[in-house]
Amino acid sequence: MANNFQTEVRRDQGFGVIGEIRLDSPHRANSAYLNSPDAANNVIGRFFTYTDATATNVEAGDPGAAGQVPAGFLVAPKTYALQGTAAGTLEPSLQLPNNTQVELLVEGDIIVEVTTASEVGHAVYYSEADGTLVTDAPGAGVPAGTQPCYAEVIRYQAATAAQPGLALIHVDKFPPIA
Image (cartoon, rainbow, N blue to C red; front, side):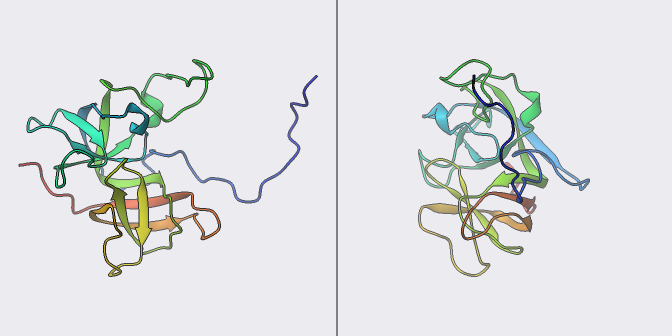
């Protein structure tokens, strides 16, 4: 019989769920349909851009053409039906299939996963390849293969150099859709 009891107590617990709106600050979101070339990149908390001029379809990052119109951060993880993984239909996952109608945050405070160490005040950038988020000190320049997320900065962080992880970011100064 497998041991199903907790055997380890971790000191550094996560402070929220990726994609959740965290603070009571004003927030705005747009609606669109996922349409990424690789559906594996349709992950809650990542950055998305519009794939067409009608602003109805989005893809993770900016893989098709540089300079696509930004759509926002995929949020609201508890509003989507559980899709599961290859291991089973009830396995937890933050990945959504294409053609799912989603909410994309353009203003507010949300919890995201960052793939680099971060500190309070760092600017946030998204990977053009898959929409994952990286951070860097303000004024350090845009990291290669990324685009800025329109003046979002880390307001609280739980990531360190040893273990990147969750961060609370403030999304603001988002350009309007023409």
